[in-house]
Amino acid sequence: MGIAEDIVIIAVFALAFGIIAQKLHLPIMMGYIIAGVLVGPHTSFGPHITHIKDVETLADIGIALLLFTVGLEFPIEKLSSVKKIAIIGTPLQMLLCIGFGTLVGHCFNWSLLSSVWFGCLISVSSTMVVLRVLNDRGLTGTLSSQVMTAILIMQDLMVIPIMIIMPQVHQLQGQLGDMALSLSISLVGVAFLVLIGLRWLPHMITSVAASRSQELFMVTVLAIGLGMGYITYLTGLSFAFGAFLAGIILSRSDYSHEVLSVITPLRDLFSLLFFASVGLMIEPDFISSNWANLLLLLIIVFLGKSLIMGLTTRLFGYVNVMPLAVGMYMFPIGEFAFVLARLGKSSHGLDNNLYMTIVTLAAVSMTLTPLVSEIVSPIYSWWRKYFPGSSQITAPAAAENCEMKKHIVIIGYGRVGRSICNAIKSRNNNIIVIEQFPNRIEQAKEDGFKVIGGNASSDIILQAACINAAKYVMLTIPDRPTSNYILRKIRRNYPQAKICARAASMEHFREMLFYGVSSAVVPEEEASLSMIHEAMLLSDYSKDVADKVIAYLRSQNYEPLIEAHEELIVNDDNDIQIRNNQTNETLTVYTDALEA
Image 1 (spheres, rainbow, N blue to C red):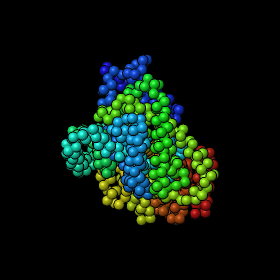
Image 2: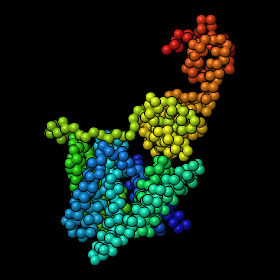
Image 3: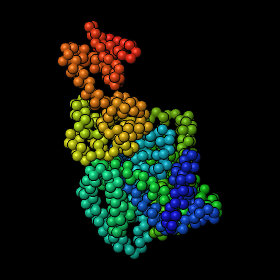
């Protein structure tokens, strides 16, 4: 079976050890790495991978898709309240870490180039692990979380110039002019590619979305991401860099969140191969014979990087627990260190021993992050006990989790959705529309509403709409399976959300009540109520009585309308009665009770 057999072996082992890692509250990627170690060429038991080069080639696609999603998620507009530490502090922190790593390498008698590579590798923290730990501890809404997220995003972006520059450093001896010329030509080509991409790619995505083919949409996204990667590869830059540029370009599209939702499963699949390929290169014998040096380096990196992260945070005015939390949460070497380490090895900047050292340190530091984060609070409590004055200083204002709060989310901008938006915008124009059809997206934008293009059943789309901070959600989609699926997603992820939904039938209405909607509307029954109201007026009932009858019927969730054996009676005192002709029971509802 060739490479197919290798992929099957990797998938099975990755599944088993991914589940074990999750049960142990470790990053799932650790399970993938361990799976790679066990099926790699450096173990003497079990099945082994035979086409390592082919697996590594597929892993390169995982790197490209990872950077593609980084470009898609680049939220520069959301970092305004922490922009100083993000834009200025992050490059400063990374330069200090690079200098620190270079100094450490000198102490271990490494070459200057290897020492600089080591500094670059430890300067990046693990986005996946840090955000996972923050989420598990319920800290995603804190100022510390906002600062860490901003730094992590900027670190991921700073990886790009490192990937471009560092492989060329070995050419500095006598070839500086040639390298500068080659790099200049590459950058000009990239600039031209970006201009063309900004002009045509968003239109291409919109055109494909209009076809309503999810399969074609996914293929288009994949072709754009990998295609631009291949073009930058031909210009002399990295394959992953082009994918990152594609992500940046498509992030400006109305369908950016839909793009992210369809590419994320593919990214996760190929990331599995990437982390497994990292495991393929780990030699257990190397770890057992160098454990003392590895432990010493781990301690040095932990102390040095935590101190640099903490001092940088303090320098930008964040105090109290912030410097300690940022320093200790962000000490793990990031997943991009695996990418850079492979790049360093292939460009002869790292020898095999230093490559193995970096990979091992990164894996162990990720594993220790949940444990290290546990001691932040005890250390800060001890600090406040002996230095109470420091807790009186206020930190900068926290960034908001969402751009909008107490807003209204309208899912579907068809005739009903548009009517709702136009009816309420004079009192509340704080509205976000979710729509997947291009013509309706353009119409909503022309009407002055903020629009998120994509399918509302996507977790990413719902998160982008800030459902957790919304005042209420209006679900106007008439299709029963689609609306039920969206309701389940909202109720599972945002149990406190208030939802008003459009039901296709009374049976659908009951299903929606089961899903926990705050209210629901059945168009056919509303038509029936309107005709009942009109019939009562034509039968000489007063408008006040007719209005109260309709109010009562609505308050009973339409039940009297669907029970054929129930009869509506209005007596001479204008009291409403519901008579059950099978049991002869009569329920009287006094109109005075409905006047409010």
